[in-house]
Every structure is written in structure tokens, then in C-alpha cells.
Image 1 (cartoon, rainbow, N blue to C red):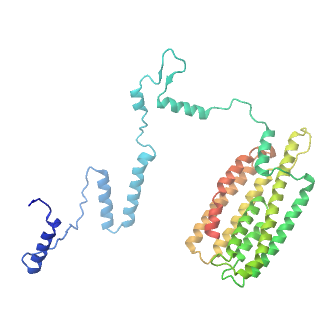
Image 2 (cartoon, rainbow, N blue to C red):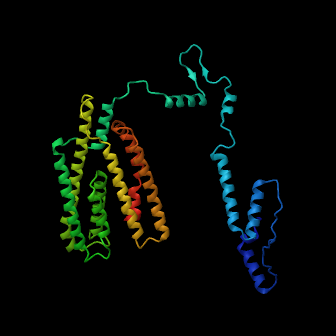
Image 3 (cartoon, rainbow, N blue to C red):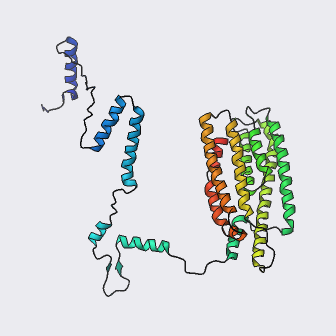
Length: 380
């Protein structure tokens, strides 16, 4: 028989014997209790962290929870700043210089054979980034052609004589879209437990000002309406009603798609006019500025934000905190767009505005990149 040392509680036999002893009263079981002093040690120590923790504990004991929490948050921010903002001043350069007191090593007898230290490679990268262009800069005509590509987004352009016809067709399509949308709302009211009118009103507002941005918004809005009406959706219409409204929804989408194509052609015409004006002699009359496209986009986004403000304020599902949060987000976007418009309006002439369009287009995209996410979350 082999014997080995092990813990008392690891043996099933010992645990069984202990249980019998407790049941028969052969041993007295004393409950394990933990006791701690109610008095806090608030005496200062050489350790800053220890002193801050003692101060916060004393404030909490006195009922000053808010002040204790404030001190803790500021102390944590202080500790994070020590590394985040490089308050210690150490960069590691002295360590590299100590290891390579003569700097980068050059091989003797070989051209361009240099083993650079990490500091010299870093300097080379900075110099490359800060290097000024030495080649021939693009002229204004090349810039305008680039603007044309950005704004037109279409290979074919309509003749300038067709501009009024295209604009009239867009207005006619938007008028038919509004009337068809009203008909769709009336057809679905009998089956929907919720109203389609708020989505329809939003689309109608965009249709009143059919800029490229608003036409894109209409396309997304109609896609959402189509999905909400499908019988496969939990709150959709019946199969019988779907067979009646599906052609109507297809008509709405078709009208908007055709309007988008015509709007792209109008932008292309405006770009070509500007290019033609650039090639004319200096005495020729100026062509209409493409810069109006930027202003139209800004106005369209501001109109959209105004619509969203009304919907957030009137939505019964939003409490006061939700309304404040949504309105604050909208106000920040409005301020950014208004500021962008002021800068654009402050440019000296149309030539300066035209040359700055790519930059303003980039800023506008940056401001509005989260519009769709906000619309999905707050507007539905």
C-alpha cells in the first residue's frame, strides 16, 4: 500500500468522516467571519496615488460622492496625459545617438552605400513629404476638365439647346411622382397599422427641389417604401394589394431614375460651357459658373436637415433627451454647412470658386458622410 500527503478536503474519506463528526457533535464548527475596521486611515503618505485614494474615500464617507468622482476622473486624465501628450519629454533620440555617435555609416569605396539610422530615415521621409513640386503645374483648363469629370459622372452630354427641355422634363417627372405618391398612400392606408405619409412627405419635399443630391435621397426613400410594402415584410401589405401597388411603385422609381440621368446631363452641359468659356478670348462674355452646383448641394442638405428637425420634434416615440440629442447633431451639421457656404461665397470671383470646387466637394462629402446612418437611426 502506498501513502501520500494530500490536502484534507481532497480526500472523499476524510470529508465523510468530518461530516459524521459534525452530525454527532464530536467537533465544534466555528463559522468563519470577516471583520474590518470602520475607521478610515486618512493620514498622508509619500505616495501620491495612495493620498488621492484616501482623499476620495474620505469624501465618500462624508457624503460628497460627486466631488470624489470628479477628483478620480481628473486624476485618471492626468495619468493618461503623461503618455498621451508626452509630458515626460523622452523621445528615444538620445538612445539612438548613444548607439551611433557618428550617425549613419557610409561604406568606404562604394557610392551611395549608406546604412542609415532610424533617425536619418525618419528625416528623409519628412523631407519627401514636405518636398515642393518642381514639375509643370496644371493650367486652369486641366482643372476645369477634372471638375467636369467629378460633377458630370456621365460619358454623354446633351446639347446646350436641350437644357430647358431637360429641366422641364425633370419638373414634369417630379410632379407625376408627387401625385403617384399620394395615390400610393391612399391605397395602403386601409391595411397599414402605421402611416406611410411621413415618408411620402419627405420624398415630396426633396422632389420640390430636384438637385442631384435630393434625387439620390428620393431613390433611397423609394427603396425603403418598396421594402416596407412588400408582403414578405412583417408589416407589409397583402398579396392582393401588392399586385395593385407594385406597378405604381415601379413607376415612381422609373420617374426618379430618368430624372437623375437628366440632372447628370445638365451638369455635363454646365461643365462644357465653362470649358468653352475658358478657351475663348479674354474679351468674350463669361459662361455660367459651375460653382452653383456646390451652393445647390449645400442648400439641399440644409433643407433636408430642416425636414429632419421637424420629424424629430413631432415623433411621439422620442422623449426630451432623444429630441435634444438629435437636434444637437443637426445643429452641428447646419453650422458646418453654413460656414462652408460663407467661405465659398467669400471667394473673390468665379474663377477662384471653380478652381476650389474639388476641395469644397471633399469638405462637403466629409460633413455629410454620416447623413445616411443618421436618417436610418432617427428618421426610419
